[in-house]
Length: 156
Image (cartoon, rainbow, N blue to C red; front, side):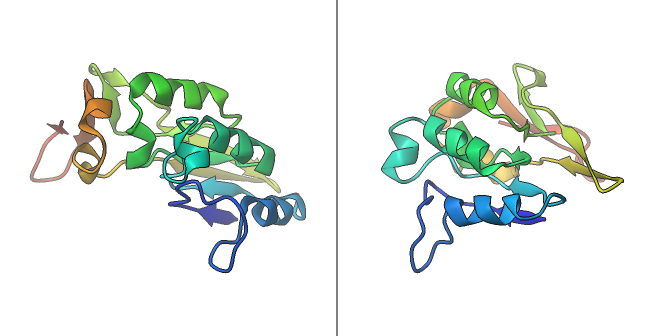
């Protein structure tokens, strides 16, 4: 399994960055490999921000990503852009606790089968998402959190 997170548009190889080309080659070299991302890919460098994440999603498609959890910056450009990026992705973007106008916005989970094994993935956005991204992108969005102390509290 290969994992990335917090790419923020850093897709080309450098001294500090492995690059999506190398990631794609690693994935392609192993038929049983699974490539996942934990979010914050679609905002940052100009290649990400100028296309509101669409070019990053296209590159992730080519690299062979299997699943992604939505990070706080996937919400930076608003719900409509997030929905466009989700539709553009050839992999599910997950957010089990993300509600929009009271309904689930993203898929909660997915199961990938490799080498006879079923591997489950789910995405959870942190409560900090509500305050660590562009507030305009969060309108109508709630992060459902449930704990023993807080029963089904919504965090705007």
